[in-house]
Image (cartoon, rainbow over all chains, first blue to last red; front, top):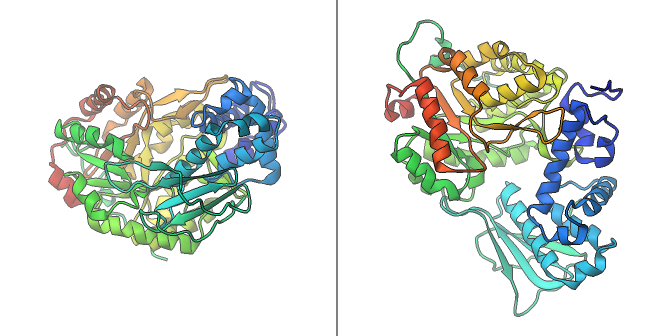
Length: 193
Length: 297
């Protein structure tokens, strides 16, 4: 094993690198710290491409032409990597070399909005029951519902409203629902970083 | 702030040699799609109780949840993030948790000591704390969190990877003493810690002796070398995990003891039953009924 000049005795020494392919590259590949960071980065990768495998059609099978530059961009922006992780990937794709192919087929956007709605339903511990996600690139809405019964898991719905809601001022907007029904439109909230 | 007293079963641990077999086995119920399987495990006698990952069910009516299983229940918290969340958020979380505690009268309530984020950015593979530098901070947070919830909480040990993990046993021992908190001792996490950073099994002896509630699961190796062991809840129990349990069997087994078998991926009934049978063979059929477990709660 190569001697390491970077601190790596405890997990905390590695926290900044756990979400940074660039920082991971500074650790020798035969060191446990490199493997620990690699494990963390693989989960960011799988969280993206296992849930939205369509994106691999854009990037190629290893996903790295999306994953690496997105993670670097997310690091610069200090993105929180909360439930909106996927939406920020779309924001990045829209300004990338993949923009034309991305916008030519609505399946990428639907997949990304559904993934973020599901992630909200999995991770959010506030009192809201559901989330509605809208996008300036479509009039469709995606709703994520938290688990409402012991036998039923989270549910994701795609809504094609007869009377479209006003578009969010940014690329994406969202609002949450206090009950298990879509009967309010309090206006769009912008994504927090 | 209140320091929670040890229950009688722990306070008297080691005072006498027990002959009765007492370890109850449970299964982690995290989402509705394993409901029928958990019911079948119960009906066929493979488990004695269920552990709910309770904050996954915060939008389910507490009475519905209470009626869902005719067995004792443990409550395991995943996302309180009590080391990072502000007090109003924790108070609101605890208010909802209490509705389930009241409705379910759980055997125990447990939580995690770990990091969910760094400088406001979320980890997808959660982080281990610094046991040396953060002791006082964690101790005070544990006291505050138990005070807000209004009861003793059992905190799970981390499947350490980096070498600082060797400090975990002494940390948890000290934390129990200073706060009255329990340890939800995850045996396979200790196996990962042993494999990854050499934490001796014997260093956990006092923690195991004082703990009543346990977890066990499969782990796997990392995909690249130098291999590290990862707590995945997706594989069969490993031989060294079973050896660890066998070697410390008398330290694990005690009045009111529970061991939850965790499986969150590759959920196959026959494979789960095979592991539960190994655990039953190891610990024996508990000689107290489900009723006794509910009473001990």
